[in-house]
Image (tube, one colour):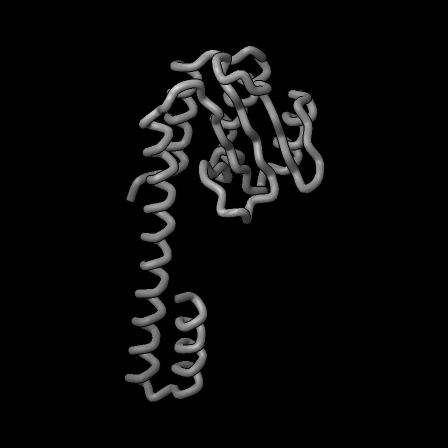
Length: 156
């Protein structure tokens, strides 16, 4: 299976190499994200409304602020505050969104890959539960069978 953390780091390298940013702090933050193992492991490039921390980075041609960080009801464009937040809360998921001045197929592929990876992991989880249900039936473990069946119905 593909190492998503390495793929994320490679993608950030790609962004750093192919885009310019008005604020050098954006480059500094991206380098921090890709070089820090815990932070890079907790970065996602798509959000289904479940991620509390969001960092938007815009390239020079986009016309938007280079950095914009949201956490709950707080919004900041201060690079030092953003860096401090990332450093102090390394274990929390960070939605990283790029606002690019041109369409980027690799960025779309990165988001699509995360979607595919999530559905693969979900399917693998369902298959594991189904195997456990079969084992409970073989062992005539009625309580475990009921519990696992209810769980499978919840996750479907």
